[in-house]
Length: 156
Image (cartoon, rainbow, N blue to C red; front, side, top):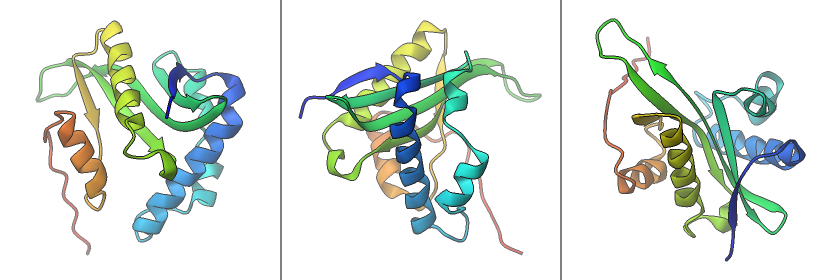
């Protein structure tokens, strides 16, 4: 399969919205007790906001004119009362259509985002992965991401 990684354009929004819907539907299906349905999410969140924000980035993976995956991210200075400030980038969403998984699309998207972050002076990249998403955890392990904070939850 031959795919190209490109910056997202306004003309990509219809396809991106469909893929974002699929991403949120997969999360809801895997963990409905914590994730809203895709129908609920799309009422509150729009991928279009990334296109208009200079601190946000969207890349798409295209096979011809079809988007087969995307990644969104943002960068800023992470400031805390206890840790040293750092220019950080965040992977916010990463999604690849089912038929295109395990073909290098996700890795190419992450690498492109990391290149852009480096151009902006980012020193560290962060990503949140839910505990149930073992596939994503293994993927990021292979890309040399390591634990930073362990966030725990307890139902009352």
